[in-house]
Amino acid sequence: MTANQLYPARSHAKRTAATLKDLAKTPGSDVSPADAEAAHLYLASPALELWPYSDQNVPFRQNRYFNYLTGAYDLAGGHVIYDVANDKLTLYLPPIDEDDVMWSGLPMSPEEAQKKYDVDEVKYEKEVEKDVASAQAVLSIEKSQKFAFVRASETFKEALDETRLIKDDFELSLMRKASAITDNSHMAVMSALPIETNEGHIHAEFVYHAMRQGSKFTAYDPICCSGSDCGTLHYVRNDQELDDKLLVLIDAGAEWQTYASDVTRTFPINGEWTKESRAIYDAVADMQKQSMGAVKPGVQWEDLHILTHRLLVEHFLKLGIFKNGTVDEIMDSRISTAFYPHGLGHTLGMDTHDTAGRANYEDPDVMLRYLRIRRTLKEGMMVTVEPGIYFNHFLIDPVLKDAQRAKYIDTDVLDKYWAVGGVRIEDDVLVTKDGYENFTKITSDADEIAKIVKKGIEKGRNHFHNVV
Ligand code: GLY
Ligand code: MN
Ligand code: MN
Image (cartoon, rainbow, N blue to C red; front, side, top):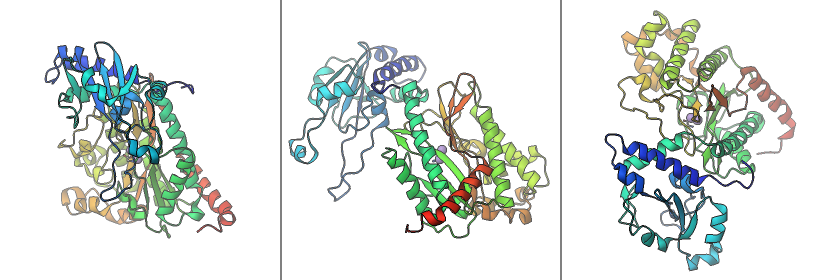
């Protein structure tokens, strides 16, 4: 990406139309091949909204699909139409609200928008109806609140989702930027234990460093937990004292122009792993290393997920947490899902949990039910690789009460591990032609992490003494 290159909206529109034409030929499509050839593809961006009974704005977040076809990540109340037959992309600006100009200044003019965005033409909203008056079909992903002639189409939405799955170089450059900001922010968190005595401080430190680097939002609410809180997968309370707990887990990612990063690191609060916390960390690191190492086009994601469960079982047998069974028997019992209940990863893009993973949340197999990717990897996909191991009573106690499954668990050994809470290591990975590229550069090496934490503690004793 060079500085003057624009977000490739026209290429996205063209690729989406091509995907739509393909999908229109498949059984069950709600768009006929003829309509796909001649469609006008329509999307709207959300209007600015106020909090209930307040004059303060809800922070504006662009509709991801609208962004995909415009690159206008900060434009509220706009419309976009792609005329498939004529390969013409038109952006429509909202009408100027005279009353608002005094408070907010003049909005972007069509001439400014034309320079800023990769579209063929920019007009105002009042032109929309006239422009589609003779259209064969005006397709969108939902009904329009403004225009009755717009038809909601699942097939068009699927076309957008499938097209979004494969990232182009421009999108990857935005994701590299988000990743670099995230790396620096995780490094800052790991190095600042003297001023982090509460989960909220971990959260604040990450956001402070991400914002200083220009990231306006985090991609999702950061998960900052310590000790047994880490057994809660999407913990967002972020308000407990670290005290003398063993580990901190921080799952946080910066966003760059609506593109996400999603990274988790786990580290010992005092810079020292215990025997148990290190054993669990090493097991997760092995699960991540082996699954990531196998990422390449043509690989079925479920196979990598199952591989990580097998590795968990092997490690637990070695540690003595599991007993009385072979790896296969214990795999068949599915008890590993009580310690590793989520999927190995998900697609990543504008959304943290991005499109086209084809999850099946109804799957009767609990090992696959929460897996957000159920497909073969293709070059250009961005995915997270994020195995974890958690010691959560809510998940494990039912297994301990069921004799059939409890026989595989040595509770005396397990009791030594509850204090570990949870460990997850999460990196963001591009599927390349021959393998993968890891966008996440912040170290996940256990020894290096301990060194960084300790160095921060030593250096920070004097440096941070005035901070409250
Ligand atoms: N940050 C949420 C996730 O890792 O999926
Ligand atoms: Mn994730
Ligand atoms: Mn995450």
